[in-house]
Length: 308
Image 1 (spheres, one colour):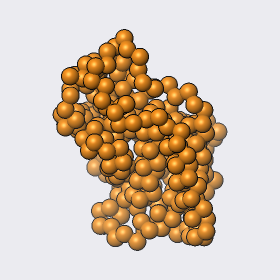
Image 2 (tube, one colour):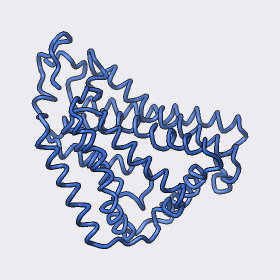
Image 3 (cartoon, one colour):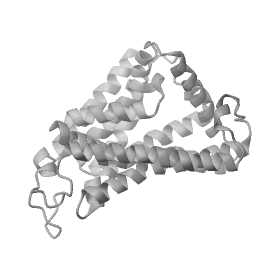
Image 4 (cartoon, helix red, strand yellow):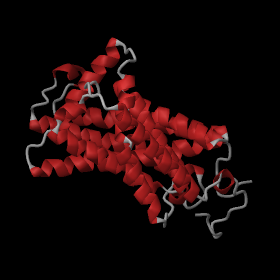
């Protein structure tokens, strides 16, 4: 018996997480519908939204922030409360990671990954999409362009908080702290869990012209979480990745469009890939994490020393 678990079966944990996610979508839809209705916005008329209206965009930012919390953070916290007997935040991934090297590698990995991710984006643009997917991409691009338009310096602070920091926290808690943890337990394989989680992480964004580079980011974040055994380096890496894109898009709005035709020299792509995979190898050498250390703590009690 695993004394720290209320739900022992990984499949039961996965079913619980999926159920909570479904409930979170319904709950979020009710909240957002109420807010938009109060503001006089008809969600069915999305194609005619006036993204030049500053007040309307402010409402969308509020809705975006609320949905990020209710869809990702809320079900993760409920999952942890139901699944674990004690120290729920610890088992979500909020362990202390005392080695500064993990934080430095986290930043280095995401910065060096941009050329390789852009090359994956070029490959992604050769994948045919349905008309519905293309229309959805155009709507998402319009919304993001409106979000990142800077009318004053306070806007950049709000954008960094709403588009970079909040998703970095909430998405990492849900995807790495919950989903990846459960899928590794299901597959009994760290890399199988990391890759499947990364694919789902990308698919959840519903922006298919950027599916491959976003999945690549998910793999990097998944490996970082596994080797560091802590969400803090992940949150930092995710925030840096989002923050760089937010700031770059302010000065180069064309970067928001996933379908922009930027072609990088192949040597730059190869250098980027070599650095990223070299850093992952170094990270693995620094790590003391094993499957048994994370998942096979049958007799762990609340007063025991917890593995770090």
